[in-house]
Length: 507
Image (tube, rainbow, N blue to C red):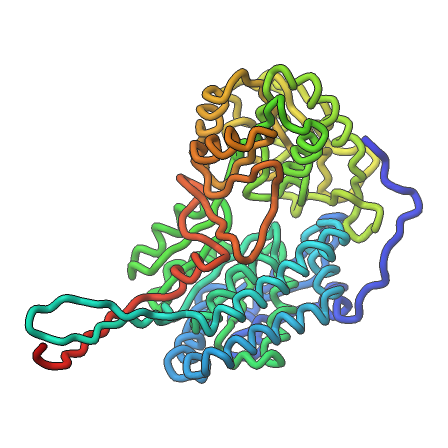
């Protein structure tokens, strides 16, 4: 494993970031006002690279969720947001994108400090994708349309049409792996469709969502339209999921918690959309560009420290190319520079929290005990005494029933498996309870597309991985959830259809 640079290079802390770090106590946003939790309780946000506190935020609970839902309901029923023209709503969302872009360095640094990801990634991926996402849905605000229907009623003339209306008050619970981007994924479409929102950020990474909340008024989004309640999933998240006055709940996170959300939402039969876990198969055929495929396979699992729901954590390599691809993959993994995300030399930062560190290292131990061999990595880098760091790890000799092959790890750990033919790898790729993503590497495009149709996954990449665009739907099959984020498809989650009949008299 390459050693971190001795002379680290850190950028100057952006002015807006200083207001969020240094042990300061933040507030949460309810009805356009910054407030403490009703209980006065707080929780601590930590820098995962140093294990030191960054800031205190309110530990919201049921009473706070009640206040936020009440504010969102009032804003939806009697506030100006729904009554604005679609063009006005679109301009407000576009203005929010402009403001995020203007404060892009602040958001990038907050994301890196709170989550641990390299600053270069926050700058080049997270923040630009957020801006693009808001702008994409700003454009959709004027295109949420109904339609006329040529019905056939004997002897009568009928004008029959549909209205596509907002669902109402939406509860949105976002994860810690892409905190700001996941907030944008949820907020952009909800706002474009005219809904109001109660947003619950992950307790590990609340800071960028709170900073986003500071821009809402300047963007022209009225009070109560977006409420941001920080707190733990077991308290604030659970209260939001079961709240009787929430019309829809949207959740991104683990499959285990997704099942809890489903049960909690049954009380008032609120709409539910879930983007959950994955154990994605990444398939390399011998006829692929093996250099590109090896790099692609490394990026598929090591991007964002493997903390991606669609990470390519099961790597299937055609047997006759296995001995060619493996050394390339191992070499790439061993060259990755680990270190604090704010160090400009860093290529992989720490895991997000102590809890996540314990989870991932537990899987490493399980893999070794089960007979798997770590061809690279396999533990904590000796050169980093503090922080939740785990080496990029490549496992070989993994048994078909091994825990590390069956369960989602959510860390920089990949299992490599040789295969002989298309039928074998298709069956193996689908042999999972998950179905979020998959990838195929080959020069035979016909073979790739046939296999793409066979794989049970919501996204299949061919000769690429982790490619996203606001216009392209994303979501899962099987226990990876249902509903789609992004694209036109997401409008279905945040609107409902009303059919209007008008009797125009005898034919």
